[in-house]
Amino acid sequence: MKNYFFSKSQNQSFGLVIGKFGQCLFLVFFTLGFLINPANAQSDLNKLTLTITPPLVKANVSPGDTWNSSVKVINNNNQPIKVFTEKHDFKSGEEGGIVLLAPPSQSSPDSQDFLLTQWLSIEAGPIEIPAQKSVDIPYTIKVPANAGPGGHYGLIFVGTKPQAEAAGTVLKVSSQLASIIMLTVRGETTESGEIREFSTDKSVYGRADVNFSVRFTNTGNVHLQPRGDIVIYDQWNKEKDRININHQSEFGNVLPQSTRQWQYVWTKGNGLLEMGRYRAMLVLSFGETSYETASQSLYFWKMNFPVLFGFLGGLAFLIILLVFLLRLYIRRAVKNAQSFLRVSPPPAPVGPQTLIIPAAGQANGGSINLKDKPDSVSPAPRRPRRKKLVAAGLAVVLVFSGYYFFRSGTEKAPALDGYPKINPVQTEEAPGEPVLPKEQPSSGMPAANKIVLPAITILNGSGQSGVAARALEFFASSGFQEINTGNADRFDYAGTIIKYPQKYAAQAEAVSQLFPIVVELMTDETRPEEIIVILGRDFSLQF
Image (cartoon, rainbow, N blue to C red; front, side):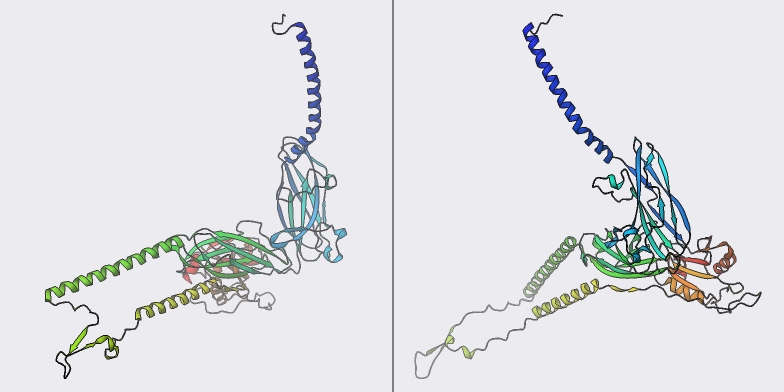
């Protein structure tokens, strides 16, 4: 083929240049490929995604038990991967954080009784997971016979590298890469806690949101999950809103001898008619074996200052305008009355004048200048400035009243320790005959005194304070001897519910006959030795 663009010598020179350029280009791409490939591999490694389920495990065991379970690791990538597992003990950090503890071999003998990993066995790996597949990794917890009662807490980590090969990196802790195990060993456990703080960041708010801070301290030896509500009431003591705390969630646990903090935001109450003093009441219930309740209240103000100042400015302008128009109307009315009655207006005041008085022996008389005798004319007494004194007094009263109300708005109500409990009464049974409770008056309602009465727990789910205490007196007068009270898992129950194990069906039916309202009966085997009564709003309306 004939070349129409270059001559022969030009073609040879161009080929030589292309050859040299190709060799250089090959060396550049080879070098870049050698340097970039590891980075790309590391980038692909960092983009790997894993999922571990369940993220949280709660279990109750007894000394000497062996508990078997597993965690599922899901490979969400398009290539197979190899994972490794690790186990760590942890404790609560500041305000709900987690602090990893040293292995049992490096811990002190006093702290080894509360470690979990010394009982936990799991395959370390490597464990290969195909692309877009999942693998169940089993583990076993063998609780020794002399294990101390209370809470024991550990973590199972999963990563793509073992820690020895991580080259200085640390495996991140998150819900996708760790499974939390919260184990409770039965025995002499203590479930106790208190509200350490319930506060707002300010006492007076404009259009800004109200920030609530809740701090709860666990003073027992097992983990607690406080649940409840922040109920907000307006200046008319009417419920304005409700903020749920740890409802329908397994998280929000507080480890023993630690404090956890929650932050909540209330975004309502910014209208013109919604300004005023508000009351917020925190109610928390906690405990698995025995319900306990703690509550605390605080006050704050919602003031929409731009709207308030505009309203006050407009009101002041209207008052000034009305006063001006009223004074103008009075002046015109007086003027018209004077002209109708032909009454001349009073003469205008004049300045000092010279009075001529004739003196004895002088034909022309003498002259007296009134300016030379100011003492002869006494000035008219001035009226006290009553208006200014009244205005100053009103201002002082308003300032002290505002200070009193704003100061009272920042005071906190004392915390309540919960409802009282009635201890069980020990009775002796005769051979072959059950012990029946003594008949007591029941305010005209049928008494359940023909059968043996089990323990009963009354939970307030109506959202009204004091309902459980009133129900306690009602059931005590009906013959029940072992009664516990507390708060339900939520406070919006419309109807009253009775939960009972199947063996107490007759007793639950007898309890339902005590109510003057329709009660829903439900079987529940989670508490085989007691009847649970959840009081709804229908009970609070009747009592």
